[in-house]
Image 1 (cartoon, rainbow, N blue to C red):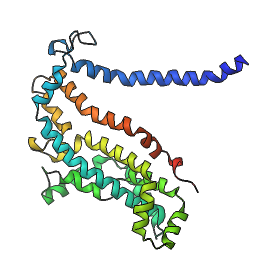
Image 2: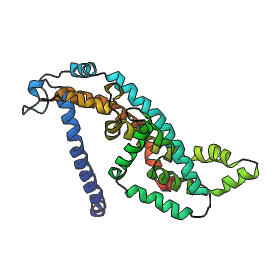
Image 3: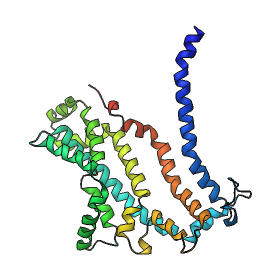
Image 4: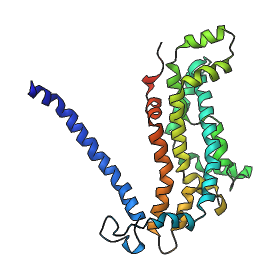
Length: 279
């Protein structure tokens, strides 16, 4: 009996140890970043992993060394409308694919999925030339406006799969009671699709908050820089202020970590297709 219990527990123990080892490997770079952020410039390249004297003032100095709050305002100026546009437009598109029947629906959905395999580098130059002709370079518009036109193939796919699991009887009952398609979408589909919508919001928040490539391409003026671009100011022509750079990196990383831990329940539910409502 005891041997049987031990035999069945062994795979779980092995899996736990593997996951624990993987977690430790992932956490080492984070610990190194925290350690460097608390060192003096002279200690950065020494052998000791942790600083001898913990310089908490590095965080205050990092905020003062760059226009941190200006960059924060710029990041939020981009983030808030992109968050709204991505979640709403992807939900509308997903609702159409989940509930409406129209000619070419399957082919159109396959084309949508195919765009997920298209590298962003392929469309980078054409999109830049288009926004340049519109006069939108060095403005926030190229980073905001596309979010209101579909919301992204992966987001549409995620929400569409969830909506397909919601019983159609709910739509039919509301339709019989006189509800329009828009009312059904706003009052039934959106509230029931809260988990994938929150998951899409988390993905969008993390993507926009950490986006370096987009602002680097379209924003030229320092007063328009985002937080991700602002980190480059710690790199001089001949040297890098590693302790300040790592301190600013930790400050920028904190909102993402806090958001994920607070909303991880909805995040897990949202990416699990089987969590949709069943009839």
